[in-house]
Image 1 (cartoon, rainbow, N blue to C red):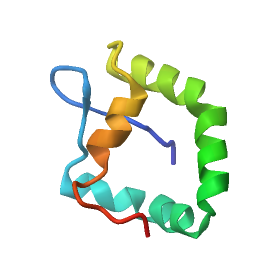
Image 2 (cartoon, rainbow, N blue to C red):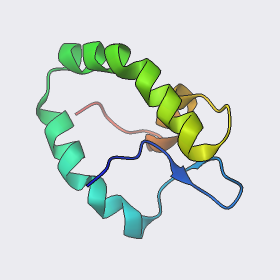
Image 3 (cartoon, rainbow, N blue to C red):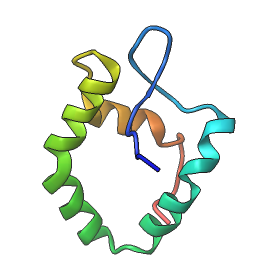
Length: 80
């Protein structure tokens, strides 16, 4: 399965995945919850340029991947 950091909408911009689409991310979330926050931060910063490029390529926009990450986190979510 190919991981896509951004789901595209009709307007070809980053959008929040629908609930029917969210289930495929469950295994990734389970792994991320087991990784130390330090390692997760290091990986995020290391791969950030690739995430940003993939977001631009997939959405055909110049939207920032960081903004997409913040949109994807539910308001009031706890770190663990």
